[in-house]
Amino acid sequence: MTREIRTLPVVEAGPVEMPFTILSWSEVFDRDTTWNEHSHPFHELLWNERGTSTAVVGTRVWTVTPSLGLWMPAGTLHSGSATTGTWCRASFFGFGAVTSISLTPVGVEITPLLRLLLERLADTELPMSSRAVTEAMVLDVLTPSSHELLLQVPTSDLLRPIVEAVQADPGDPRTLTDWARHLGVSARTITRAFNAETGTSFARWVAAVRAQHAVALLTRGWEVDAVAEEVGYRSASSFGAAFRRTTGLTPGAFRTRPDHRL
Image (cartoon, rainbow, N blue to C red; front, side, top):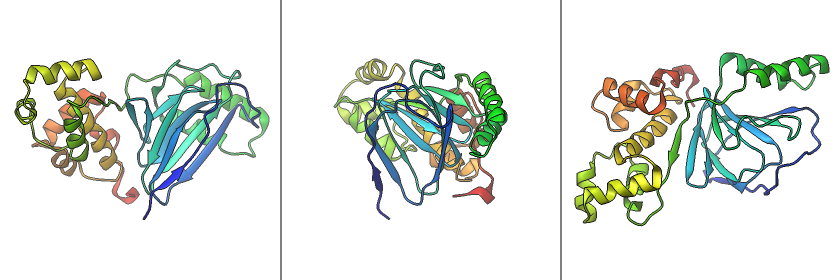
């Protein structure tokens, strides 16, 4: 099955005519889909009913899931992708009518209450008085989260072989010392490069790649033991500890029940 490429325009932040202050969008993808770099005049809250998708701003890559959404301020250039079977949801917030919760993209926890409120606003027949109350409740509970699945991707020629290898196989067992030997440089050189380009260490960067890949598998209903092995951990307990250090959440927070597999 071929990948679908969707092209959207670059639009500056600003007021546009919208039927509601918060407008809902939903789509289930029957093929892998990619969006070009674009921007919207309105603020956007991305989340999924099922599966995972990604949003990219510069060298930062966020994973969006049913429990962790992403707030995208109006006018922010971003691209994205979704895999076959993903059920993507989004809410568009009118610029000017709603103050952005952040000046930059930020994670948002999709709590059961927020989910119910957003689903209620998807009803286009909702009476205006009820809609106004529901929109006010959404704005009251909508806050940035300390949790997000964010990966800063290095772009230097030095680190490119590491980036390509680990993203292709998050279970790649090579250590910092192994990579230094392979690239013919010192471990200290690689460490400095990772700190300069990502603000974190080689080990933490690898853990972030593994966490993002693990979430994609968990939302497909994979067992935690199988995910741990797939992303390079010797046991479910060591995987769980590393996952919590990286995301602040347990693997179980993302695991979809088997009957909901894609």
